[in-house]
Length: 140
Image (cartoon, rainbow, N blue to C red):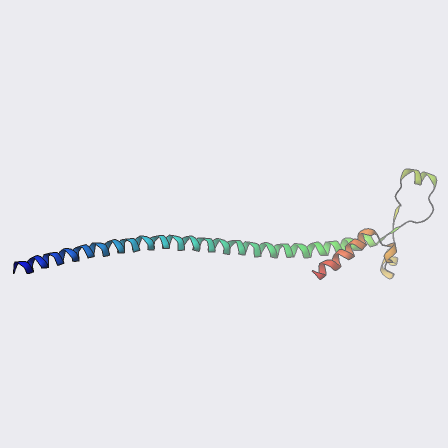
């Protein structure tokens, strides 16, 4: 009988040791779960920040698109205003040629500007550059 009691005691000691090992393993699992939770929270914060930046970029892109449209409209208006001027290719007296080396700008009459568009060779360089830039913008 006493040998059975001793054997039961040893078995109970082994069970207690096994329970301690299981407790240690469960504690390690709990610590690892906390670390995973912290990692997931950091990933969630990073994704939320990326979403915020993406929304901000989308808003800025819309604003820039509106600004580009406005600039295009203004450039077209400026091109129309510049197209109303013609270079004076007539004769110059000696006082004018001494004062300035650039040709004089003479406003074209409105009826001329509206009846007949200027030829490409007579257009101001800025108008040609504008037309070229507008074509490139439309291709984009």
